[in-house]
Image (tube, rainbow, N blue to C red; front, side, top):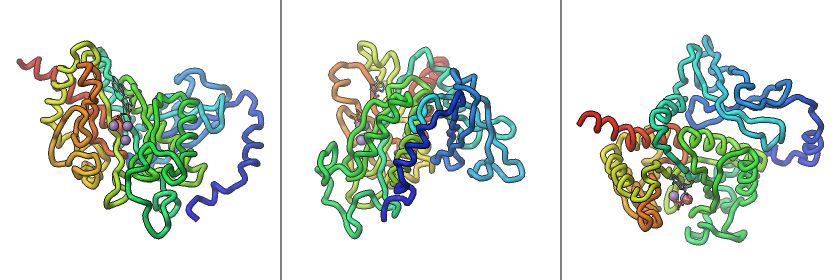
Length: 370
Ligand code: ADP
Ligand code: MN
Ligand code: MN
Ligand code: MN
């Protein structure tokens, strides 16, 4: 059986209990990034009434020794609420709260990349940096093999699956549609979805978001994805290359613009930013996956719509380049560009922090010097 036992429990019974009234009380689920930098954890508490603003949500804590974030002897970690969403599973008035993790000394935990990212975003906020991230992922059965693939073999070669329709082309669309609705209900800036090149591989896009909101919304969108998949008994993998061989990997293309790039003649600002990125290729590769480039090494081969991890390249409408300028942007001479290098399992805070530092802050530093 390739779906989980839990997904087979009686869902009609579940609906009965979930529809019971709960009085004035409110269920609040705190969500945070664990010590792996990829995994999400969550736990729930009751508040006496519905919180209206973030300030109504108290700080909380958890046992960091159970999430690879602390030693048992000094294990309490702080959960600092940073972003509130409606809960699409238990419905209004219940909430999902994305949290930052602080250590016992109130310094950011090792995998809390939001803290630093937020400082960078504060520094550049007059430039109004916008981001859009394209989250690719692969559905797996409980056996760890792509969902819906024949048990002792492979589906037909890639070609018909990208944006495909039909039972022989689209594997697991239920999950994609439910996740999309859940994101809209929660209040996440999800802007689209499509089936990907490898069967059982899909993508959703979040954006445009200004500054730190990009990371907040993408992390919560990922939480909803894992949670929806749990209901259906399958697993969403963000591994950048889940299947070796002639199968596409999974990335997290990151689209970026500043106010100047979006204004008339902004293409020159885009070109300047790309120049800066070209000088920092290795530094960016190190933060574009949680293992310093090792995950992306399997994916960025120069094949399957990727650029080689070894070199930097850029081009209009070029899906084999590190950076692509969309054709429309080339024609309009303004807009945004796409960094195709981030891995599906990247930390969006680390990625947008690096792009912003290189493209905006580096420029400012050099100008001050000259
Ligand atoms: P692709 O053609 O690469 O598959 P998608 O349509 O999947 O592109 O994703 C485009 C992404 O670009 C979306 O996340 C969208 O929010 C984002 N985006 C659109 N305009 C801008 C902009 N001006 N600045 C930054 N991101 C943008
Ligand atoms: Mn896309
Ligand atoms: Mn894609
Ligand atoms: Mn893309």
